[in-house]
Length: 189
Image (tube, rainbow, N blue to C red; front, side, top):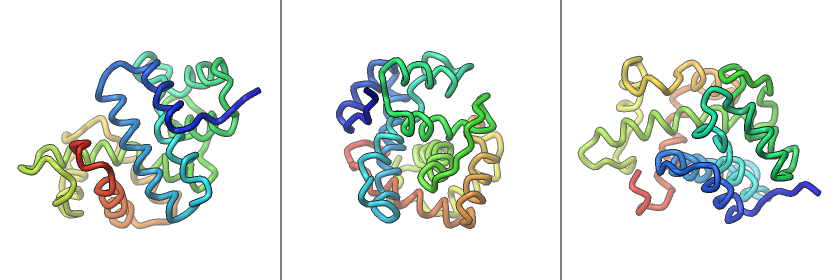
């Protein structure tokens, strides 16, 4: 019988398939950002949003060339809920060989913030504070316009995510910075 793991169970699953701190930390950041948005848009499913964020890149470290494709196999073998599988892999739509389009609002948030959290994090570590606490929209926008900076963070995906949500890009960036500020300060973002 399929199930939706608790956040603690999801953390263990993530660590079973990922060894590099970078990938684990990225899952934790996206999980926290998803929880932040769930508090506003879907408070009854806050933990579910956080679990989706935590597990969204479950297969990336081991199978980067089959990202979101292998994830389906792994999650089905773990007997995870089909809705959870769909939601986690939808963030790879159009860029990883995954044909699952984000349809739910939560899936659109994940699609929009996955790449954006990476870009914001890269901008933050370039600052003297190495933190998002004093990071402003203009700093992120400046680096956003520089394709060589954090080149692995797809600006097209970020832009498409904002469009899917019906948000201006500046609004998406600002709100994601605020979401990242809400995370555990000891996390070192």
